Length: 458
Image 1 (cartoon, rainbow, N blue to C red):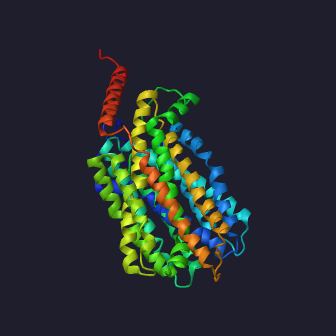
Image 2 (tube, helix red, strand yellow):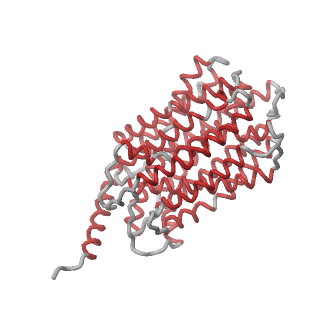
Image 3 (cartoon, rainbow, N blue to C red):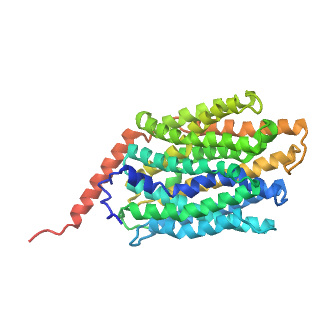
């Protein structure tokens, strides 16, 4: 295991080190697609659970679980072990995630709502632990403004590559959609220990010492009231809800409204996801030229305007739809990448003001609103489909009015919310220049504190 670096002398990232550190994104990237696109539909069509009830189950669990994240983030920031502050949490979360994925993706022959809700709750706790620990760890190892775009870009690329495998699994599993979902679960269970073990073994974790003061309620509210953090939180909510709204309805829309087979729809999804690999690389590079918030605004405008043209594409035409989906996936790669990198910048500002590392709590704010967005994406969309009379069971016949309603619901949410997410960054001030000033002040203070601890010579 590499030695822990000096927190004030940022570690130099080689490409192999960057690749190893990004590997916990393997299971999370696969779940980004497998969970909202395939799993709710799986429980509705193959296990006969009600459409609205499944949507409400996903929403209710997410909303209840939301309160877990601030507690986990606070515990992470207070953790002190020989393995590090955040690595120990990754190691603890790995077996928990493997167990819950196995239970959800390879369930018994008969399942109940209680089974689904119970395992979803434990699953969301496990994913929160991994997401918070990995992002917080990245923020302390990658200390510079532009370096964070590179590191979070590598995490996004790894997650996108893993997500790209998921649409291929139903195609490879020729025996049907049920076998495909089960194969997804096996893929995620196998990738979880591999990714986390390599990251833990190959990446150091600096331990910054603070002023020794525990988080107080007024410190928490000071972070929540920060204008830069408020903008990021609201933007991340919108940029999570918009694409997840689309993901939840994806198979319904492309199969019933656009006339694609499930295999063709999965292939189009692969084009969307695959374009996220160059998208993450280009957007992280562009952020080093234009700044993170400006790059995010460009991606939001392009994504929303592009979706306006989706309904005018020829039906069941892979040749027209594939390039369109690739452009959308290219732009969408920017959303999680740059929001998380900007939270790390806020973490430096908070450390300068409060004297303590609070990045775990800051990321808990982000994952908390993500849970709300994810909950609403399933709960609202499935409820809306029920209201318009859409039938989701296999073999069901829908009226033209129900199909038109499906089209309207599918397009309206992503367009509106992604535009709102981009608008949140109008007037954002924590750019490269301001962050450079914060880093200089932090390094000066840390150097002065270190000098005071050196005992004078004889």
